[in-house]
Image (tube, rainbow, N blue to C red; front, side, top):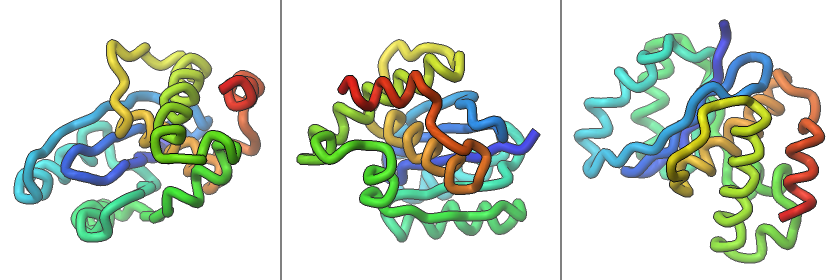
Length: 160
């Protein structure tokens, strides 16, 4: 099965894995604490669920280069996206007025995606994992694995 891995880059990274049907399979947040620990862990993280076909990266370009090198070794397509790009497609203007508004909206929408995908519910959902979920949703639409937002996600957007 083809998968897409989205990463909200930072020393604390959010990860989300999607299937080629556009459904969220799993998500998490990891605090590496240092660039050297991140560099040491990147290969195993990407490899742990089988190499993805596509990797979507958003955030720090220096950290993106670490993940891009791993992806290249695994023959994985890498797409970088600016936060303004995916937020403009997934969040309405009022949800992007401030960074805090965007984070709150990302949390709400990520929970709707988790429900729609029948993915395990979170005990807690950190903002970096929530944003990775949204980055991944943007990614599956961008690569054509999902043509449009499911109705339950659209209603979550209009209801936030």
